Image: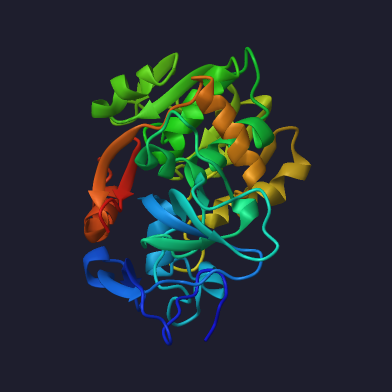
Length: 343
């Protein structure tokens, strides 16, 4: 019996839990994701067993579910998924701690990331979880880890956003975008947010100083230039994005969605990194890191009232496929949570 992080005990175990099961890759959530009763995972040395109260879906959920682009498969599994489900975000209560774990005890309310998080119990690493912000529900807290950590690193670490900077944010109404707008505003930037018509008032309320409806105008065509462009939408060329920058501006690419199964849009990131040494503009991307230090930084911002998750809808765990479908439909404003209350 394997006892590694994210694995599910399948023999010698009498206690079961509700969980989402994914046995193969596929692009249609209804055909790939189902719920079942599985054996509860066991906690091992250096691990924390979390009773999951809530989770959430993001664009990464679909990529792990679909196994696309193929570049993710060395991590997720070449022919079939290594993990029983594609969930990563958790908010819940510590059930047990393994040998060698300090700083956490049963009963602690925590949030963070863990493999196979679409389940009533998940095994997490202590350096990937932190105390849950006291003012958030479990459903709100579960929407924070992956998306807000990405936004924090894009704004603070890669974009070096500070007071007075002119910042353009594409994909501003999505999961990462809503946190990015709030953080850029909090750091004193003049924020221009790009969204579709129904979402303009929503992103304005997040702190955007100016909003652009991309369905009615080309947000990169005007004379305005930006010190920092944070591209989350991922559907404009590198050349177009560079034209919107000041001569020494900074481009941070956090998203890239194309139909190509091999690179899946990451070709823009690769070309940006290759070109950056040869231009005064700073062009690049990054892989978001999930760690407790970043979660504690986010907690401080949340506790101070600077940052707040925008939850569009909460689904029960049994409707995980419907939540992923909602995400793919492109109508979401903010985040989609999954609740496990009663499971």
